[in-house]
Amino acid sequence: MRKALKFTLFTFSFLWMMSCLPQQEEVVKKIDKATVQTEVIGKDVQLVDVRTPMEYNEGHIDDAVNFDISNAETFAFQLEGLDKEKPVYVYCKKGARSNKAVEILKTKGFTQIYDYSGGYDDWKKED
Image (cartoon, rainbow, N blue to C red; front, side, top):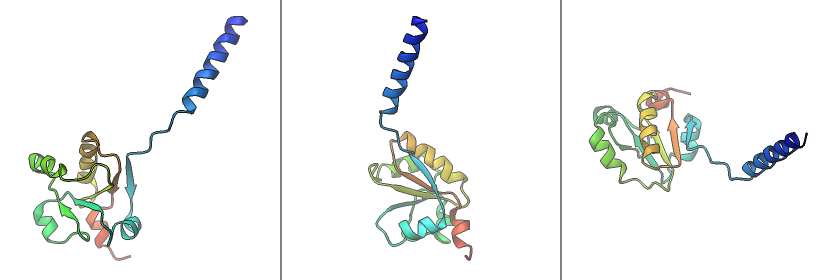
């Protein structure tokens, strides 16, 4: 009986202590068109279009910079120019390449990543 009581008290104490630790915030947040319109357009943010230069030249969102994820070496070099302490907004055509970019950004130490998963195709759609 005493062992069970000690075990229960230890378990309760451990769980209570763990609950007091700060909760880690989510690093990546999926965002939609409305969020891009209110939090990105016309603002001084790090907006990255990870499509090819040809796709980018056919149209892009606001003041986005083009970091072509299909060129891994150049992409990694371009990321060095971003501020890791500020939010980074990423998009591609439909969402696949931005997902890949998000994973790379996480490994590089970025902590505030916003993935416009609808991509440029969603952006062009009439509301």
